[in-house]
Length: 153
Image 1 (cartoon, rainbow, N blue to C red):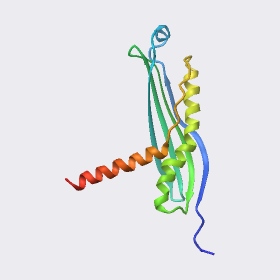
Image 2: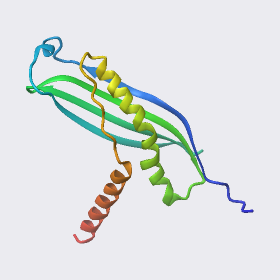
Image 3: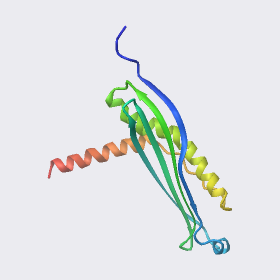
Image 4: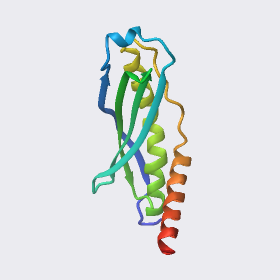
């Protein structure tokens, strides 16, 4: 048997960290006619909470919906998770934090956003599925290109 501790990954908690809903043009906006334009911005943040292998991973969404350049509603939500990740090799830690953890948190964010929008009196916006592995790979590729460009400067 090896003295090395076994890798472990545990979900400590999933929670709503922040939620903001604005209808800046209500009640007049309910009378507007036209097709709404929905803009969704997603962000991912991770931080090491303590030296015991506890990480907080936050997935944020900002949903801005307009009709005729007037804001129907603006929803900002941050869904977070606390994860215990121990004895994982350094080269495997970043993919867990950038792929596995957001995949666990994101369905909760989708439900929160849809529910918040539904409560405004408008039909809910259902966020599309996200391929966090593809996002992570794109970030790696972008970083490699930036490093390559800096190396040739």
